[in-house]
Image (cartoon, rainbow, N blue to C red; front, side, top):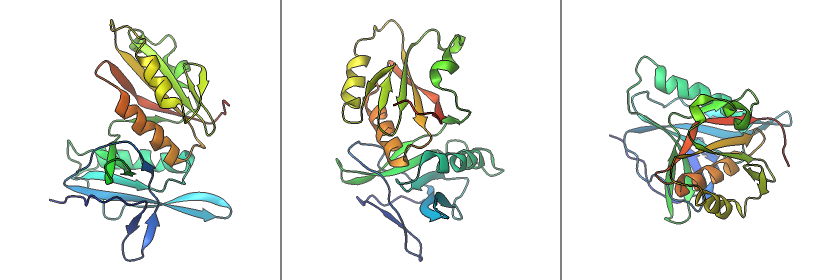
Length: 229
């Protein structure tokens, strides 16, 4: 049974070719030990003036957990299609095994260890809709306090109120404390397709660490292509 080595590094090195992946460095705790795993690598490359993700999953095994080591400089639009494809491969191949999960890797500056964020079961919706449109008049969401979060390169919107990266955590925490406990709160996450993966994981780890038992995260994540600055 394989156990991942717990180190604090700003980058990970792949194989004999010594290719580097600059993983996100974040001040948020996550899962810190995963046994029985194999790894997916997404390298940052520039080709014909375009940023592309060079994906390597040659050593992945369907009967293990999958750890995604993704370069923080890659925009979501270059990695989400590959992630969707790999999620399906991991979950639905002939040799897939129930209970084997998908994780993103990052360096945690608090514990000084390599950490992981589980995203198993997340569905990335890439047809351009925002969650506010998707949930409108949808009976599945009528019994929740619905909070819509929209993330751009230069701004964040919380239920239509503008904030920024620096103040996001405090403002979201303050808002969540205002809701009555008569029903659960659900967060709906919307990410601009041009947002860098490092920024995406910055927000996702914050959200994961401030939610409580009464707060859910919609398993659908909306990847959109229009700016809201």
